[in-house]
Image (cartoon, each protein chain N blue to C red):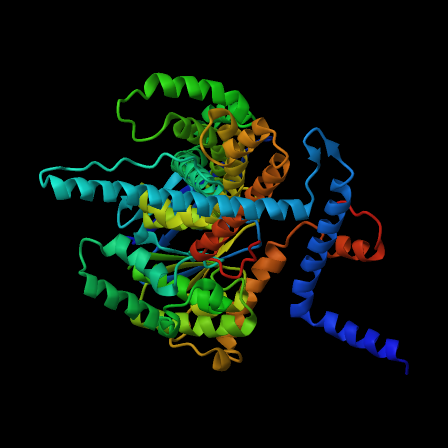
Length: 281
Length: 323
């Protein structure tokens, strides 16, 4: 079977005043249809850059991305993105935000009535029909992220790209949305690439976890297949030895093999000791 | 407990009531100002008598209102007389077709306010029609911005008085018509207002457009929105707050510039009123000019409030504090 999404030999350089900065070096990743893949790594390791290249928002300096055998050129709705900060248009209601996407994608194929039903269907998926006529500043952070997901799902993407979708939410809301996402995933069986730096989230949601090495010139370090039965339940998994083992593997990668070299804690303690003095950094 | 302490406490309570506080201090401010004005004015002597205090200004206001009523009565009497004359002729000769001549009395103060208002709105409207599209264009494209920026920066600080002779000459040369729809003085004043007031709207629109959040731009890219949809759905709404900041500054400038323009272009508005009174030099003139000054200020204030109301209506962010 042909690969659904093929990221091959992707490298990217950003121009800086001190010469080009190589953020990614030779990233390879093949993803099957319906697979849920997480990208995990320390901040600054280029996870978002990988996602942005797949989305078409950045152009790879070397290598490229194939979706169903066709090269990705520029952004498009078949690779919908759920942004970290919801990125809803603040002057439109939830309904209108989803509508903007639906009108753009299905303008030629759906009638007005079908579009309305499709918008409501997607809001229903994320349980947001009750706030369809509310603007983003009238609903909570978790609700905004739900609408953002509904907007992305409404584009019927071949690949759903999620850039730390729950990163800005509190722990309870996050758990709630993770459950919702698994539920939706069960029905729609989307191909998903999700960026996260939450180990539990990665193990709970993914079929595969791609662990990235630290930048600069970051690349894929290890890939972990998560072979846990679905539907997954966070409570019963908490004591499941397999789950605990997967979790330990990711943690080992992040905190032993790819430990951040910058001394984070010592500098913090000096800051505390030198209160009132000017601290450079 | 003495009587004075009771009244002191109750006055304190009374003042701390918020709604009263809101009304009380402005009233105090105005009263103090009127007092200082009255005291100060009586000490300034000019060749046209002492500088007008609030009382004199109030009298002049009344006389302007009376003038207005008198003029209106005269006008209706004028038309009545004509009609009677025509009817009388028609009674003798049924084929007679009368012609009503229009009244050509001098405009009253209130006619002049009205003239000023529509001149400023025409000039401001034209400026907006130019400034917003150009602002959007240069905000979207940094090359166009760099190309136009020097021109904008050079024309922005030019005084209306410098533009006026040029505008006057161009208007009288190019607007030649036997039956003109607009008077030349109106066009000259309007174009001068336009030239001077479009810059804040233009620059603020450009800044607002250039400052659209990157995430929203990415949303637009992922959705592959067309250029027009992108501008209408994403760019304009996010630029609206700054656009209105610009529009309010522009309207304020337009109103200031208009008075100067009308003085020199002899457009029959408030500017001409001030100029005529100055030339007139009667003992009432200073008082009348002061009435005009206060009227100009008050109308300027109302125009800004009107813009604010429109902004409140248009703005999507109802939590934003607008003042």
